Image (cartoon, rainbow, N blue to C red; front, side, top):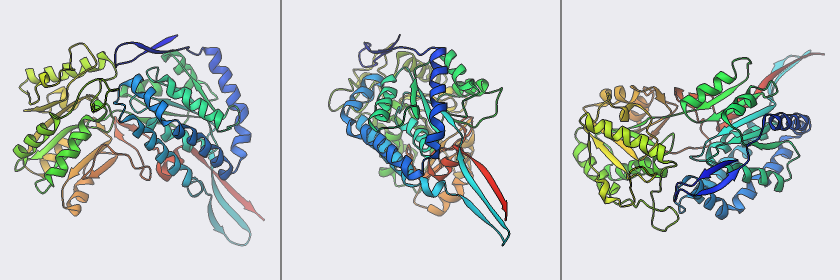
Length: 458
């Protein structure tokens, strides 16, 4: 059994039985048996099942939101928003499936018929993290099923009840046996699971180290592997930015979910003409945050997922301060913040530079470093000085300039005047060590299918 320790109070919230190597083989065998009938259904028929599957999750938002908060610590007032986001992404991917999966026909003249079809890969393994347990997993699960694949989900042991809710939704939605299954696995058995010759595709969301481990497990076979990994997402505040709107959104982008978001803001570059005013406003809003028990009303900043994770961020902050950085938010303002606990106050660091880990290594916590820049070129150089490339934001009133600058930024998504957001109509992808592959949008369907050509001579 594996215990899930709640970051709220350190109690054991639930215990989950690990599946064995034998269980892995049995689940894969059931999936293999279910695949032909499921893939032979029309897209519309599959959509009816998946719509019911999604509906169950949405109808149980209150209970599921409570479970999310207890398992990973997000304020209860915010957890229902994850289910709303889950539904938006799921319904969008269902709606575009027919168009995204249609065949491509080529004119072959009178004698020849030619076309290319998108066909399912087969058995898809989805490996999902705890920080946004539904929003990360839905990106792969829904389009994989709509494409005619069958899915086996392995979720984090920090949020195992999410997997159980998915399994119940599959049952309530009437999905045929074996079309959607879950496994609770150790690292060792996860490697065995995805390395099984019957697994036809992998979708992983997690750390860079986790992505490397997944990739290593696939060294002996050639299958598609989508990796959504870390980020050190930057923002650039130009001299023509709307400061009030900019500051409010960047504070939220930095500290929502206690900064535990792969596309959250971790570093900000501000034009020197706005720097002092920006800092003053940013710190003022940050000091109004309420850190505490996420079950209580009025709390908008909960604990980090584990004490270990919070201490990692504390070490980054302390290391930066020893090297000359300054924290502008007094931790004593947040009485719930305690050493060697998951409760960590938000930190705004200045006098930072790229020799400090807090500006180059993923923090995944409530800390942001802010640097002054002289011009656009210096900002772009700083933004690109990273091993990561998931999202980046430009804050400006000049859309033409933002377009030109955005094309120079080494990133998967460029935002103007918004951040920490995911639009299901756009391809969700990264570059450098932020991973490879695509989820969501019509391009996400390409990653979960293969092409098959037909050349018929009359």
